[in-house]
Length: 319
Ligand code: XMP
Image 1 (tube, rainbow, N blue to C red):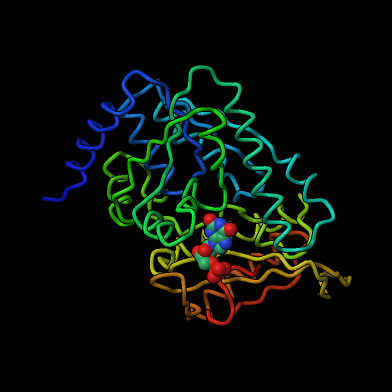
Image 2: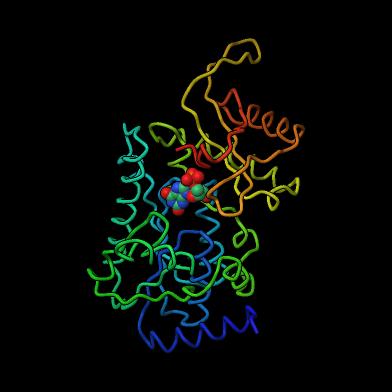
């Protein structure tokens, strides 16, 4: 009979048998899958696990600290946090093209991860949060390798370069099963049931050039939106919600002066498979509250809009 407890016991036994006394490396992103792998491996092999968490400066407010709190502080997992924000912003300077931005972020992520991995001694395995849908998806692709470090962060070359073997304990599980494992393993519910967050992070939610000041403004607006969604019991009833930064200035009259400040768009969708999506019919009163808070509390934002585009044709992310 399927139970999270059974699956965990089973996976732990399998991992122990697979890796023996070898050391294992895991790239922790803060996402559901890598988090569950981290918790599972920690229980299975304890100190033989080393996690590398690359903070690219495009995470949500306090997200990096939360990952460190959960894993390093509370669970005692060995996590190396790499603060690479400056490197990412430098590499992104002046780049406004969406595809090139994604490539820069993806490439640099792999580079930073590999640098950290190269500093570690005696690692024999690379663990990954590959889940069953990833396996199916990549079976359809020509190389069958697309899933290797899923999300956009493809460190597919690393196993060969470092002579690492792959450990993928979630390979046979669906997302809802992975979540149940996470809860059973003691991960915070908010982490396990969070909305999807793209690998390039806020990099795809800042239109045009990505800069630290823009990212800081976006983070402040985004946390207000998400906090209010949670407070109003709307977070779990929607599939994905976030703020987008528009680098255009719009006028506002505040106090005795005119301000030309930036614009925030709010996006909230409901979807089953993320292939099509319907914009969430959030209550007007709720939207009103969020807009007021953002404009009043975030210095530099003077206007808030709500995205009412469906997918298709509009994608969920803005770029
Ligand atoms: P779109 O914007 O294509 O997004 O409608 C569909 C889902 O995929 C997520 N997404 C990404 N996830 N790396 C990721 O890990 C990416 O580069 C990426 N781009 C989009 C998006 O957040 C949504 O859930």
